[in-house]
Each structure stands twice: as C-alpha cells, then as structure tokens.
Image (tube, rainbow, N blue to C red; front, side):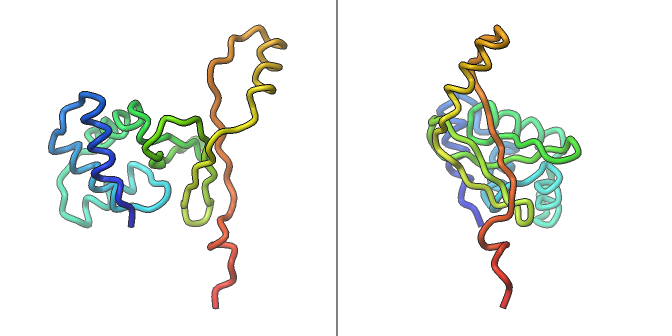
Length: 146
C-alpha cells in the first residue's frame, strides 16, 4: 500500500487549494494504492470502501493534483490513461511503468537536452519541455513464481 495521502494534502496546501472533504477522500484513495492507477480504479476502491464520491469529483481532483505536479498522467495503449504519484520534488524526471502490475519508478534527470536542441534547430519550434514514458515488465513480474 502507498502512503501518499498526507503528501498530496500537503501539496494542496502549498498550492493554496482548499482541503475539501472530496479532495481528502481522493487523496486517501490514492494513498492506499501502489503503482499506477486509473480514475476507474479509484471509483472501484471508493465503492468497496463505502466512500460516496462522484466520478466528476474524482476527475477534478486528479486534474488538480496533476496541475500541482503531485501526479503525472500516463498515456496507455488504446488512448486510455492512468496516473502515477510523483515524488515530493520538482526535479525533471520520467517514469518507467510495469505493464503487468502497474508499478512505476521515477527516473531523475535525463540526457535528452542535446536531442531536443537538435529537433528545435531542425523544426524551428522553441522546445521548452519534454516527457518520456517507458513501459516494460518490472523485475518482480519477471521473476518466476516458486
């Protein structure tokens, strides 16, 4: 189980957002998860726990946490998306996500700036940011089960 609930609430407070009951509920649902998750996962968790919360409320909270940089939205196959909790820092990072269990790891920093500058020169675009998502199978899921 994760422990991101208080961290997400701290991020809200630092961002001058109100700590509403629905945001607290969504933070608690996220804090109880490990790895990546979807809004549907959170809705199912809420239902199992008897937490009454609307779908639109969950999406609004996810958007708010994403704006704060506490969550990052991942693009999945087929156009779907999931979310992953980001560490309490503003360092540039990317994610590697297990396609089997959904576990996600942050990779701090990268060496893509020279390539981004090359793209900028070739296209005339002013490249101001980039994001990379890597997908594969984590070591735990690769291990044969005894």
